[in-house]
Image (cartoon, rainbow over all chains, first blue to last red; front, side):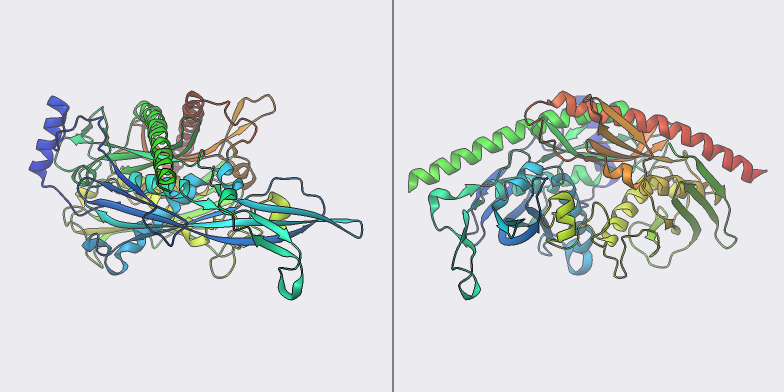
Length: 320
Length: 264
């Protein structure tokens, strides 16, 4: 997720000097301090669930979910537990940055889409909660099972990248959008299909709406290492990486970083993905430490996000 | 680990080239350059690195004509609600709609980030270096094989590098007793069985540093809903990392031998 907020060499040198000598960053944060995120849920009335996340410095990500019902018939006994379907579509807006105008948005959009798909791959509990209905019948001694499941598409719109750290903001937006998605109950009924046959029908009863299970939905933490040495990082051996990474990087820090690591984890239980970027290599001990730190921070973030969602749902119910 | 066959300098017209074979995974890498730039973007101070990673149409059974992975390909379900797949896995149109091209793009990105950390691009200002990797046959551990073979081709081309690169893939899975089992350089079946996670590593063998790395968490185990803790998650990662590093060290011996052979 490159941004065009590039710093000159001298500015970078000052940034690295400040960090090394005082452990401070240009915006006054300590190396391990995250910024406050602004999260608003249910912003889009026409989406099943939605969330908007903002970081200081105009990083803005909007996520919305849309649902579709799919049915399937399977002959014979079923042994495995069936799952629903989750897909992602990421779009970097041309308005966010000049870089994303025209075809410039294709590469970052595709990269983010595959990142989200890959970190949500382990979330089996989430996909299982998308199963809507199951109906087994006996057709002349043959067992036949009908399934009905939700196919959920999460659209992610990156509206601004000026504050950096779009990946982390996007994972928060996606998890919040999923957490605010409620699915109606589905029942197998006679006389609702074409020509009066039996079919699946939505039950229009708010009491029986079910939320999507997001306990296994991951959040990510991005850590960035700065290098000191000859100007910008370029795989030159004369450079050394500062031992302590910077958490939640701003756009300026991202563009002058020597190496970056994104750690995605669902709570503290499951490490869903680790991705390295940048032009300098990292020692294995540093990476291990960073992954541990990432898991802890993801767990904290998941807990505070869950608390926020629960609070906002309670507030919405109190309003009604 | 599967036995590896490496050969350097197999193509006459390229500046540098290499061939990699391990089991049924077969790749060719070619390097062209440094040469004059064909199109300019970015800064002039360093060479432009163009990496292309392509899979031949016949490289894998599941790949169809339009570059879509067909339904039979394990692990990839492009189509929704495919009956055969459903019987097998109980997944109705899984969220993973990875196509042939997606995989190529991802592997190419991984490769170019790994190469950027070893190539001294500042030595070739205003020039362009093309690295292309072609997968002839595919049977697991393709991305890590591409890293090894591309670095070998760069070395054959005589480009200035801080170190070589070796790639390694580790698949973690659970055995019956609940312990973790790491298998290095798995084939396609082995990658599929990686229920606990899959690690792809690009390793700098002399500097002992990680050039690039990607960890894909395994699918949640329904049996241990609350059992495992954060410590276990971090442990699985470091187990895989250790295994990948030692596999990388073994691969480095093969890489060195093939380079020495080519020099004679």
